[in-house]
Structure formats: structure tokens, C-alpha cells
Amino acid sequence: MQDLVIALGMLGICGAILYQARVDALNRARETSRNLALLAERDIERNFELYDLSIQAVIEGLRDPEVRGSSAHLQRLALFDRAATAKYLAAMLVIDASGEIILDASSDTPRSGN
Image (cartoon, rainbow, N blue to C red; front, side, top):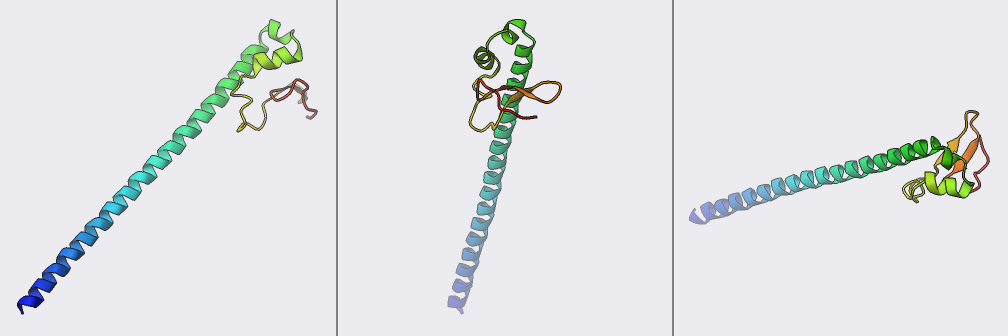
């Protein structure tokens, strides 16, 4: 009888330890998921901020008559900073009122297209 009580006591203790380990693992998984989501959110937010700043710089540069009157190479250097030519940004173009591409961040000669 005493052996049965000891065995049940040990079983109860092992069960409680396993349950607590499960709760701890779930809490760690939730915290890790929250941290990963926060990291992704900040990265996306930073990328949008870089895109916004790049677009604002192009707009401000296009308003400057000295920039508009320079060669295509100098215009590209003045208007498109390194963020605009980063590998994760597929294209940054300036188009005119009719939709024609007039400036391209990746080349002095803009690609053709509308």
C-alpha cells in the first residue's frame, strides 16, 4: 500500500513538472512569435520610410532648375540616392504627364515605355 502511495505521488510530481514545462514552452513560443512579428513590422516600416524619403528627394530635385538643366548622368546622381538604387527596389522612374519614362534610377538612358 505504501509503495502505491509513493508511486502515485511520483506520478503526480512528474505530471506537474511536465505540465509546467508545457506551459513554459508555450509562453516562450508566444514571446518568440511576438518578437518576430515586431521585427518584421519594423523592417517593413523602415523600408516604406526609405521609399518615401527617396521619392520626396526626387520630387524636390525635379523642382530645382539647375538639376533639370544638367546632363542625364548628373540628374540621375542628384535625384536618385543609394536607397533608390538598392537591390530590393525593382525600379524607380520619373514619368512625364503623358506617361513616358523620362528618368531611370538604374541607367543614364531611361528605358522605353509608357
